[in-house]
Length: 258
Image (cartoon, rainbow, N blue to C red):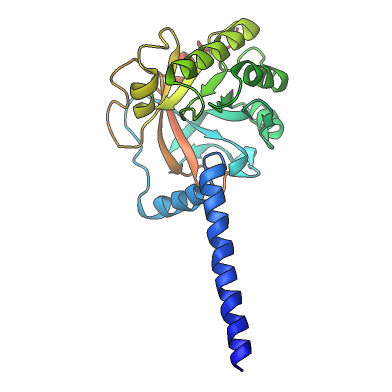
């Protein structure tokens, strides 16, 4: 009996260590949103539902493989109120990753007449030219698509902030030269102020700020605002990022590829 209890004790410790390692790995090594982030967002969705800003805005969502399979025919509104006017879809990350559901999301959003855009998740420790080429290899834009978007939200562990900014500018320049349209920069409000401010003049800004403020980024003009990361959208299971464009859908389409 004593030996059996001891074996059971070892099994319990092994189980807890296994769970702990899974959360440790997901938290430190998986690109956001990690497993930890995902369940935190579900908790926030239930107990702290997002406050949707009021104003003359066009609302939209941004998605990636983390949303799983999306029923695009049902995608029509966020938080059971505002109409979905646009969607931003993750295409690539770093110098070699392609989002698992980019092809299906990209095609289906077009088929369901939703204004679409594609974004690249920038890995700050990887070569910016290779990252730009990864996006170009995987994303074919057509007339009516929104400009390419660069998602930059982390600092580098192997280079200075000055060199990180140079890499970001290099990506933006390569993409602009290839597609013939100036990209949009997505980042958090604090990250922009701390690491990018006064370094990306001339580029449109899509800012993330979940603090229920009226102006998410006062240091620079912005056109898009990600105001929540735990919203709901018809046709999507689980939490989804909620966005708005500061203007009408017709005004947003003016930025699209001609």
